[in-house]
Length: 393
Ligand SMILES: [Zn+2]
Image (cartoon, rainbow, N blue to C red; front, side, top):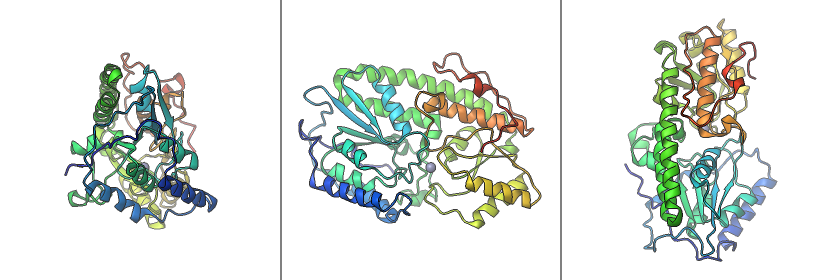
């Protein structure tokens, strides 16, 4: 089933972007109230949020002229929600004059739970294009996006080309794919990210034809790097014997990663961190680890280590043993800007190094291939040598 949602609508005429529309004003008030009530409030809008984008997809889009993207004065403002979205936007727009990219979420931020702030809403309201991940990853943004669409802001969905190509993994079978149960972590298969790179570059080229050649050239060069990354990661991840390839993490962010490289996943939570973790989940995971003799558990950088620590304690209570990985894994957020793990390529590579080094520390056979010289980015020295005595957390 292809997503037939029109990706863009007419942009507002130049000059009207900065105006706060009544809908956006209402959202601002709602956000301020939410913030005032505290950030740890349990999200109560999951059901309504799950319906609104689906409903938006069903609505016929009005006939609109082709979007122009760039304003009359040549400026082009992009707001990117997740760290992956801003990384890719920056790579494709590198060297394009007058383009401004505003990232919303930083390193270590959990996008499932992130509530857009007042300044986020202002930035999106003033943007010509909002780039987001989709498949309900940014679960708290649905109402804002609906309002932005209504006023004609272009909302670009990074996961759409992957969904259209049929590579989205459903949580609960083919019939359920429209009800918000798609696994949103599609970027963890670098082949999926290649589709996204090409599609976003094409969209930018259409919106900003004067710089089309730049976007296209960046996408071509970057996708070559992604193919080298995939081959390197695949060789390393498959060096672990098949019977030992289990990735035990806090939440199910690694289904695509596992499918790409022949590993099986065991997340303690479901595909969203909004899911509750119960004692049953802890015990079930602990029993699984003991039965399968899984040697390592991994903590994710955007999630509290509490659940993994609880599982480790439960394993020990059953007389088993399991290490915690030598580093945290990047799941929904990348590392700090300016670091290796703060890029898409570095994030995937660092996860591969961390998994293979942790397995080696646990005595499992694993071979880490040499880093390909033709990838522009180089892993830092401290990543290449893991200290088995230093466990995270
Ligand atoms: Zn997630």
